Amino acid sequence: MATRLSTRRRVTIAVLSLAGGLALLAPAAAMADTAASPAASPSATSSPAANPASPSPTPSATPTGSPNPSPSSPGLLNRQAQSQLIGDLTASEAHALMLEDSLSQSQLGLVALGQQIVDAQKQISELDTRIAAVTVQHEEVSARLATDRDQLAATVRGLYKHQDSFFVSLIRSGGFGGLLETLGYSDVVVDQERQMVRTVQADEVALAHLQTTLTRSRATKNDLLTGLVQSRTTLAQAIATEQSLQTQLQAAIDEALAALNDTQSDSPEVAARRAALERMKTDSILAQIEQAVFAQQNVELAAALVASDPVLTATGKLLWPIPHATVSQGFGPTTYAFEAAYAGFAHFHTGIDLSVPLGTPVFAAADGVVVLARAMTDATGALVGYGNYVIIQHDAGLKTLYGHLLTIGVKEGDTVKRGQLIGLVGSTGNSTGPHTHFEVRIDNSPVDPLQMLPDAAAH
Image (tube, rainbow, N blue to C red; front, top):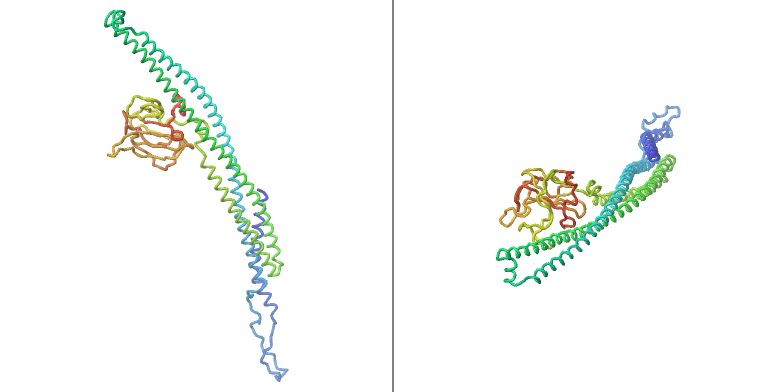
């Protein structure tokens, strides 16, 4: 830095000194031409026979030499060469500042990329831990499901095998009332076994889906990590290129300063050739600097595209979109007929319902970009499904959905911040009362939002 500042001062001092000298060059040249002219010149038309004793003719008031230098005079040619060199030095100084700023930004960007890489590695490690835990749970639930199915089959076979004839059962049960009670008990046993199997099956499907989702999320994060590492490598190469150009520019400035000094004693022809040579060198370096700075800006822009919500990156947690809301319906199979089929179930609730009074504010769960903000309607224009809803794209592959809104406070393409107001709670579309349907999707597959939200007591 001190060297660059010293060079700038030397460039500025040299330019100012020579600019002042050039301003005095024209009058000095004119004076020199005037002094070189004859003090008095006899008339060219004087007769040789004129009386020698007669006084000499009055000298001409105008000297024969022109008061203005000609275009080919040495002074003017050197001034042109010096002006050209001064212009090159000025452009070099501007590019030195540009290069210095670009290097500072590149070095800051390199530090930021390093932190993003550490964060991504941490997230992948956490995902590996979660995948391992879910895999164990999935295996345990799958084994329990197989056991429960076997138990259900054994129960049904046992009831069928030991059932007596109608009259024997009637006598043993003490009449029709006892018989009905016995049959009812058998139905209850079978129903209980079936319900247990359905519950475990729902857990098994949910865990299988979660395992798949986490695996996809890990692959996505790994791709991001690969991109970050590549960006860091590219940026490091850009910094090395800019540092090399900085050294070359310093040498070019030193040469131009020396050439500028030499032109004060050069012949006009040598000064012109010297200035032209320095112009070629300088133009080449300045063009390389402009290309390097542009390339560095593109690297930083590409790296910025993979940046995400810092809180989400650090904690893996979203913000509750409605603080202190009651979860009136959870994620998973449901009996509501208007819920669509999903994950092998006839009706599946793909999010959680947050029940609060009508008009309660709804906030973005993380930084992102609004990709959809509209009403879901049928052919007649009536609100159906999610009603008024918003979808926000967050980290790569991660989206959140907010349904049944009374009003929408953002528009598609808006950039939003964690905790920013995006709408008000309503009951639009397929809704049984004021609430917000909140979904979390990874690679467009719904996952249980509670997995990515802080504990209920913390919000």
